[in-house]
Amino acid sequence: MQTEILSGEVGIARAVELLRTGEIVALPTETVYGLAADALNAEAVAKIFSAKSRPHFDPLIVHLPDLNWLEQLAHVPTNNKHLFERLIAAFWPGPLTFILGKTELVPPLVTAGLETVALRQSAHPLFQEVIRRLGKPLAAPSANRFGRISPTNAAAVRAELEIPAVLDGGAATVGIESTVVELDGKEIRILRPGPISPEMLAEFGNVTLSAATAKIVSPGQLESHYAPKTKLIVVSDISLFAFPGGKKIGVLCFGRSAFPNGRTLSLRRNLDEAAANLFKMMRELDEEKLDLIVAELVPEIGIGIAINDRLRRAAAGR
Ligand code: TXA
Ligand code: MG
Image (cartoon, rainbow, N blue to C red; front, side, top):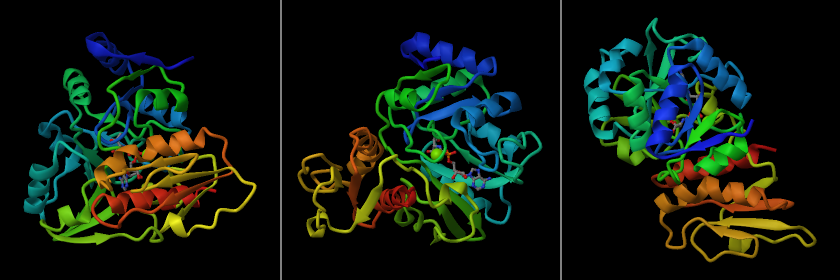
């Protein structure tokens, strides 16, 4: 089966019909493409796990059609309700995911048996249109095989998975998966760094970044994740790297012009542009049958923290 690429009004209608009948469909979001299923249909959700070869201990993010669904799926925190509401007002719909206590309605398969559920609202117009017409929450992890690079366009989804269809929404504008947070009193604990940076969250409360080595609460924290097939190493300054002879080496650099076999994340040193290019360029380099990819870290600020997080995990991959 080759994954069908859907587009336009006919594509939206087809995606909704597939989801309604318990099928899985990849949909564009502002972060990366997600592999969606009706979150309340455990049989449909099971298809996500098998298409991705995702282990059942790794829970999925549930996307809400609208805020009315919130209390049906989760127990809205009582001790920090105000903080939660301010964060939602500021960042939803958008790339911020909350871990909250789950209700009975959420099938245990979705949360891998945990008592908590991950919730967000996507800002992508096509995703919003599909979920609005379906009128139900959608479970949607990134549309890649487990442990590999998240897809940021429809062709990458098709190269990654054999599924009924992907709805083409062009290139993902953000390019990096949502920030995952957990609230603890006045504290905002970042479980997975993402587009909503610690600096942005600091206006709302005390922010802590849980270390990658800490006990795994969120499998997005698994050390080897987002891995290309080619060996990848990270360096802080590519100009100081001694290229070994006799090897085909690809370079992923930040703000300087590309090397042969190279890609530049953002010539004008813009971190948002770098994030949008990251997975696409990693994927391209991975296709070039290189012996090694050398990736340069970006400044550790804002979304740069999430970019470096993904690069370090890709380096831990093999
Ligand atoms: O931007 C995104 O978040 C994309 C788009 C498609 O929405 N989705 C995404 O999903 O990245 P996924 O499944 O690849 O990553 C979800 C992350 C994983 O690290 C998972 O372990 C964590 O969220 N997660 C899900 N439910 C959780 C829970 N109950 N407790 C802790 N972590 C959870
Ligand atoms: Mg993922």
